[in-house]
Length: 85
Figure 1 (tube, one colour):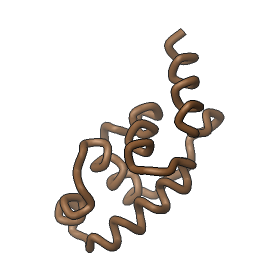
Figure 2 (tube, one colour):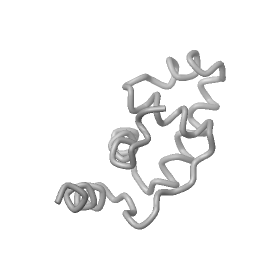
Figure 3 (cartoon, helix red, strand yellow):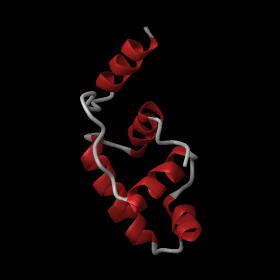
């Protein structure tokens, strides 16, 4: 029952439910940081990269997840079980 509910929630925010997209390890790290509520500047410091690089990774993540903003990306991370590393 809960799996059906999660699938419905993912469809509601526009996330594909068939198979999770493949993210690079760095994209996964950035996504986990976003899920934790960090800002791009904080993520950049945490991961030792430029803020512009974080933005590039976030753009790629949002494209792969087929979402429009970082909030939807964070929700998708939680739904796919990617929020913990």
